[in-house]
Image (cartoon, rainbow, N blue to C red; front, side, top):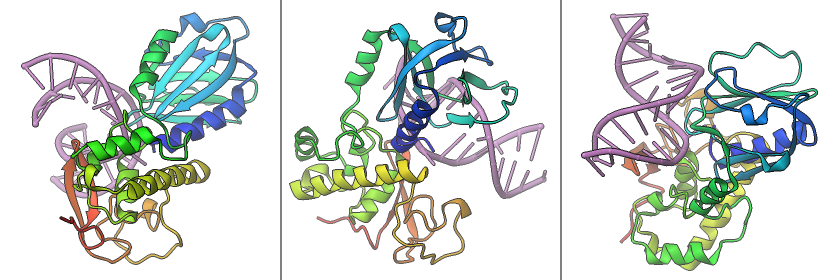
Length: 266
DNA sequence: GCGGTATGCCTAA
DNA sequence: TAGGCCTACCGCG
């Protein structure tokens, strides 16, 4: 699940569940050193922030935990009975009524203000924070011959987009992933940003990636979990036209496209 | 049980 | 560019 929408959704949910409370922080697995957060009765959680795919828990006195889910990280929220943590639970945040477990993150660490600033300095604008295309983004597109499919995964240019949204946004705009960024018009660049913002926001709301309008289903040979929710990502046939979905490797990730809907122009 | 794969990203060479 | 790292799941034998 972890693209930008997952992180923003987690920030909302975790803030609602735990902000303003004294939270007990632990690492059942032992691989997250949280001794600096050890307090009798817990440590006060002041707020939770999402930036692109990065999540920050800000506790009293500025104590800050940075989480990046990577490919495998997952949160589990326990509202009722609290099960014993599994041996892979990196972090458990326990409040009054709710406990949250984190498994498999790429990063789960206490960060200094300097480290946090450095992390934020590395990532570009986030469409969920800024729904209108920043000038810097449009200028970047105009200046780069890099394929647009590569630019979209560059977190320093636009943060929060992952492999699913890359495939879907390009399909919706009928753009081949290998299209040079510089060949896009300013208008298309603006639409691209707006569409990313809209789809990420929908992902936050629906708690999963959905890029289709209705529930029309053309083929029955697709992974059930995503049936009807996407046009090309991970599919065998294009949901729009039924043509075989093509795959190519871009940024060391599989890019999915429909050669019929997304011809390479020029 | 094993190997491949996945919505990510960093580092060394 | 390759390899490493994190975990869960699926298909295969």
